[in-house]
Image (tube, rainbow, N blue to C red; front, side, top):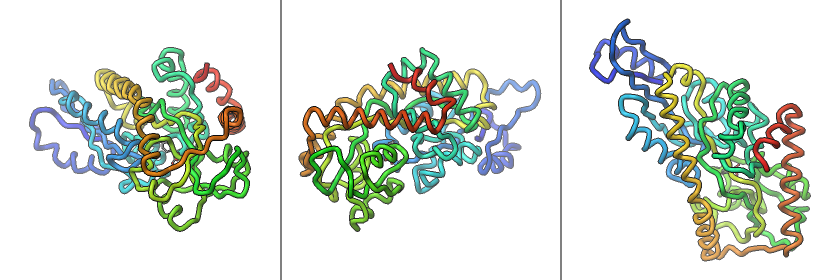
Length: 333
Ligand code: 173
């Protein structure tokens, strides 16, 4: 984190250089009435300009437009800056101040994080019913971060395949996963291989996997539609991507700066209202690209989704007997 007085101060140049490599606050001389502008360094666990960075990037733009003299965000970029599964570490340790990252990418640091995909109530409701307070306390204690706001919500995950199946049985299929899909796909008999998003295209191209888990949106970002034949019509869970702020940075902000960032975060959460229409558009675009829908029929469709949630919560509770059940009561109806 870099801070600078809104008015001059060349004596602070050395401090700025130091701040370029570490989270740092310049304290102005006693009694100085300068306002402080803080610059936070941010990364995304998804490639710049792609689906799961977009809402976050709109948030960054808005913060920078409205936060002059208060808070600015220096957006360093996507996985080229920090590999997706390292982003959690980077924000926990304060190497970066802000991260746009899904819980599935930092389960090694916080096993509870992946459970946020199981929410069935809105972020607005979660702010009201105490869920956010609970999440923030847990994330703060175990991860050294604030869970500022959700950058993605109201979008399901799906199963994409290159081999046709006609019922919810994944026996004999080798599927690309992250923790989001691991236990569910395994429960249905699949063999699994975990990869970062950046490795999916090559895995499909080489035939290393027969399919992959991914949200309903985003397969065009990295060209996977060229290597995808089918999508199972029954999708499941709810994509969670969140904006985390390192406590190292957060603790140095004043109330006004915290309130401003929180307000911007709530604004960003409002963007997820666009998702249902966006999701429908993506499904159409997939059909136009020749991706066929596999429909199990009404009964198996319902049991496929029910099984996803059953397995999802069972593993969340197993991972965290202490917090799993409480999270379930707070983020579902
Ligand atoms: O499939 C994934 O890489 C994954 O876990 C994920 C999570 C949120 C948004 C997009 C992908």
